[in-house]
Amino acid sequence: MTDSQAPEKTGTNPLAPTPAGARTAADVVTPQLVAHLTKGVVGSGLTANHTPFTGEKLADLPESTPEDVRRAFTEARAAQAVWAQVPVRERAAVLLRFHDLVLQRQGEVLDLIQLETGKARLHAHEEVQAVVVAARHYGRKAPPTCGRSGTRAPCRR
Image (cartoon, rainbow, N blue to C red; front, side):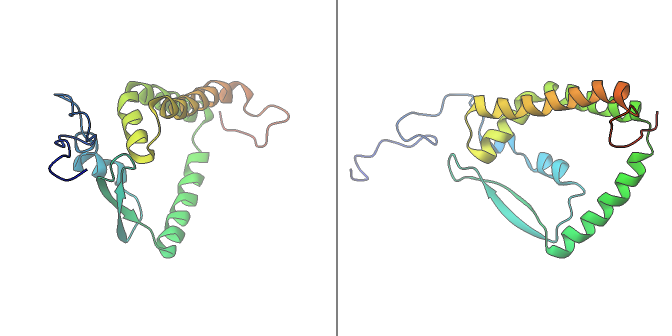
């Protein structure tokens, strides 16, 4: 097919025009969202992230060096020691709140998973469901089982 015979490209599919009002990757992955999601991420460089659907650049994301990873590990260990002192019921409440927030923002999360991985919506949904099921399980089961015989470590109530 020559260039003169090629269909007019109006979107990512050369055979079908982009529907009016359709959201693009740029509508989903805004600079504000990237800044929010990467706030506090340890990285001294940047790497471009592209969507496998179209090859379109989604964002420049922090890229960590081995030293950045060591620093993040040290900071995470310190944060874990503080978190371990929080009573288990409060930690469980955080998991249940996380569960609720993921479900409230499920559409956005599904869009991001699809854009980043190229997965079908169904497979992105399976990932979201695995996360919320695990968060709810531990949020509801941890307080009653914490400190019982057979658990790995005692818990602060």
